[in-house]
Image 1 (tube, rainbow, N blue to C red):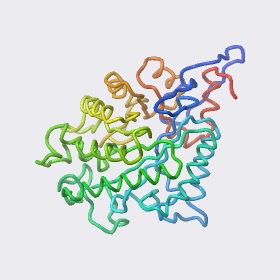
Image 2: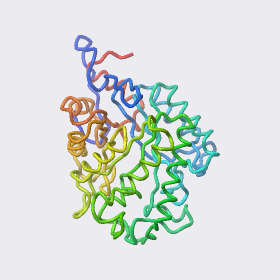
Image 3: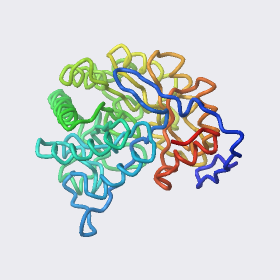
Image 4: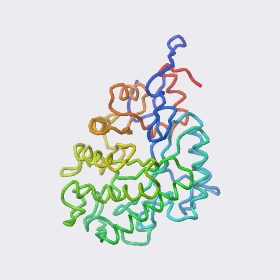
Length: 358
């Protein structure tokens, strides 16, 4: 069976080989959350068209967006992390991106959270600020970054953030977190991967600061830790907070998994409930990468922390997903593009692994 990124071909096992339990479909509980299985739909930008055939681009989930997530919740996904959602217009990455930057957004996000929770999945939302990766055509302002240094692959020079800019951005995350909790999401994920703002501060490729936010790894992680601390204080210590952590820049002189593992221990000390391992400037889908390309980084992170570790990246084969769990390299598996292509991936995966279907 292929483990590539293409559509998997599922092999249905004979009835006599059906078994009751495999790790992928074993429930897991942590930080007050109870997941019926270890399958997670990771955050993936959709910009799904709303009624009338065009994206309203006001940051609100469209009917199509809600239907998209509801379908996957109803088809057995254990937890759904809603796509990256901007906390401030200055941090908007692209047209059609979801945004929870004001109180008026809460009712529509409440509809989305309720649909996911009612469908049987745990509803989580990812909060993000694009920083130097913000789209100036949609923000109408110069992008902000840790330093006046373009991010890899771009020529736009961002404005280096001042101490006031940093404090204001932390407050944006705090307010967005409170809105997400009010909307009914069961947990929040802070996006510190894929080359966005918090990743930009972590990476020596883009963080050239000489103050307390630059230089050593602990200094480069300071902004992320301050965001986590402030959000935790506002939503309550018992409310689960995840971090999607960029573990690999894939560029000489950038973040490597050992850096990420050290940051993960810092995040655990701040009360983070889960580390979601992904790429940094290497992105969510490196070119010519093997299936499960972030599994080695996840295994390293897992060896350093006592909180659950989620890994996503080119995992389409249920047998491979089960292997990762059996070998103790992660606690949860993110199924990304395979779930975009087929909302019934979980149902088919149960058959592949010989599990009894509901």
